[in-house]
Length: 541
Ligand code: TNX
Image (spheres, rainbow, N blue to C red):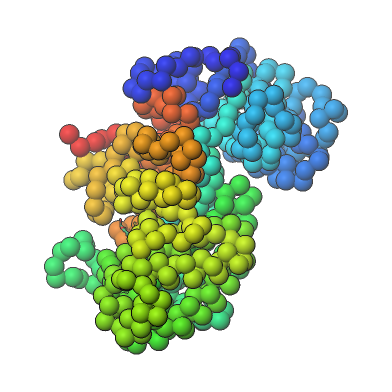
């Protein structure tokens, strides 16, 4: 990317923080950032000029204008004007092919005392660029004379898939909060929201053909209090639930789209299906009855693979789900599906015989491949948790590697797309600080520095195989996360570390610099009223 680095970084992790990075505190750290002298003053007459060629730019201009208002009290007017008609004195958002290839999400930002120019080849590049401008503004709202420090930024992401997941089954979160969550993704330059919509403890998406999925499957009689390994289990006996109507889903998808974030829906199969089976017990191997789970864990009752109705049902569900999500990828789960019921079920055994399958893992592979064919016929592709490798990977399925990196590595070697989400580095449901000071959480310990040290691309892959690693994401399973405040607590500030893992070139990752820059990021979080974990640096000894 040219040669005008303000700091030439040796690829050393853990070196001293470059001074220019610290003062501007951009997160994720841009590829190239060169401070200049002077600053651009924001005054009541400052305008944002957007390229009229593309209507989307007006919206990007409007959202930048909102952010400037939030930070300075001054709300610049947004004017559609062709670049040739530009005069100095404003903030320009233009679609232009910068000299360097910055890809669809890259941007070039030039802040000079006379003007600000943000250029990108695609609107999404401009959008990510406006997130950088936001960070150049005062972290805390100020009505004093405000200016943007002069700087030149050349930037583009390291990975295409920069994701955050949210489990809304174990606990349910309102449409309003999901939008707020998406706002957090946007400010961290993330581009994928993985929405985990179904599980044993609640089915959360309206399906018109099967209304009981939400009227029955969306509600449980109580929720476990305390840790799930505590015996005996205690329930609060409080009816709990909720779901999103298709209208609400569309609203969230549009909200995300306006922020250049793709929403990937997940409909779990064949396991984690107790909520669905409670509504429609005929889709199980035993016929039920079942109760929507209030306990956490892995349950034996899963969709029956020997029953044709199961496939009809799941195809009908996906037929309603797919048009709601522009995402090319549909996540079909596939994790933690015990084979106990299939082993005992005559219909499943008959299917195995008829299809010449040697065990129940191959039966799951058969199941996934049938679903894949259906999804492919609608022009989309499937993604599944790494268990879908067992018994043979469906021909064009993408794999989400959660039980470490091994599944993802194996899938990449088989030329399948991969998203890395290993528990060791990106399970944000794990505690992040000193155990006694943290809220009850599941499993492991995942401090900020461990997230920061994450390298999504396994070194053992060849350059060719590495291309299949689309990127990574953090998962937020919400068994022990009952409130919106706690969601914020678990994802912030770890999302900052993740954003740098996924955006900043590996050679520029620098923990001391990141720690310094986080001081300003905390102020930004505070200005947004976000409940970030102040304990993030208070790690276990
Ligand atoms: C395993 S990660 C699960 C989830 C749990 C999580 C708790 C994955 C694909 N499955 O169902 O919520 O552990 O950390």
